[in-house]
Image 1 (cartoon, helix red, strand yellow):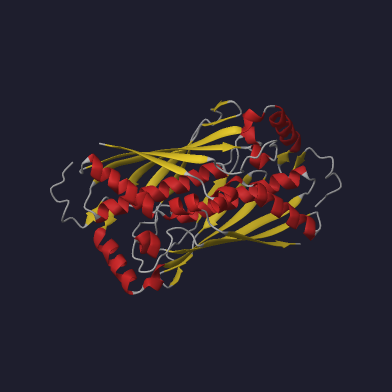
Image 2: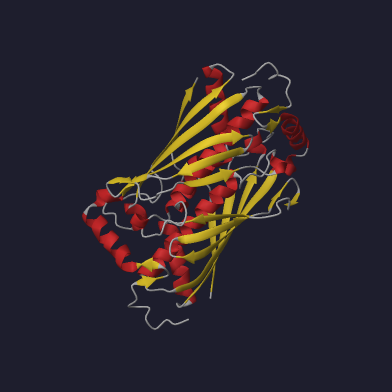
Length: 193
Length: 193
């Protein structure tokens, strides 16, 4: 690993720091550019198999149509939960979203602070008592996760304390970490015919 | 669409109702079987590109190793958010998890209640002001979603009121809906060297 150029290199951790700082400066001048709306469409296929399509979103003052193709993601349930394992189950997908967000967030923080990372790996464990979701509880169980543990292993060219600080700042700034830990109001509308 | 056999068919909406009711009966007798732990491992690749691997989990009293291959899921950020669009971004992935969970939940509810569905589609919109996550706010913005709207279109062999009731029960029992709306404690550990 060569680290000699870390303080001057433009691309650090694969992040274009000039673009990153330029974006931050622009948003500071025009805060409304930071208003985003992410979108997804899900279609049921059969049983526990359903599929989400993700493409355009609103952000930086316009609908972003830069993706030529949508991302298509399947979900399912394993056999023990009466599915055919057509994809990760939704609870596992939540762990994916959380891991991805904290990781990207800490990688950007490191890039901005001049820390070159060589490894970031996280393992997540989410405890859930399905007596809630299954409706079989005799005592109260919430339907969702009771708790989630994330363990990060981080390596880079900074001392351990600095690396820990990068992870701390990363999860403190993560959109999904905040959404999952603090909760989000969800409005459900139904068109039935 | 033929609906004459709906009250007696074993497989409804692709859900094996005999297995579903058998599972519910078993869990009522042995509630500890409903204790699950879902797991994921994420590895950073470069920039906003990271990848989650999902395979085994704990549930029904044992580690479930029924999946022969892991699910491998990529994440990314679009260009406007300094990425290379290597996958959906983490906020979009959260929408996927939410849509998938409410959909599966309502499909199971419908199967259990004798409602045959022909179509379930949902569109999700999540509003977020990235001044929070970017750290550019001059007034307070949370980092996560301000709100999420889900609009379901549901069709089946039951009257609209019954279909609406199925959706309502579905989201009331959904593990991810509860996790996202009520919040989950997340513990973060770091190994840095």
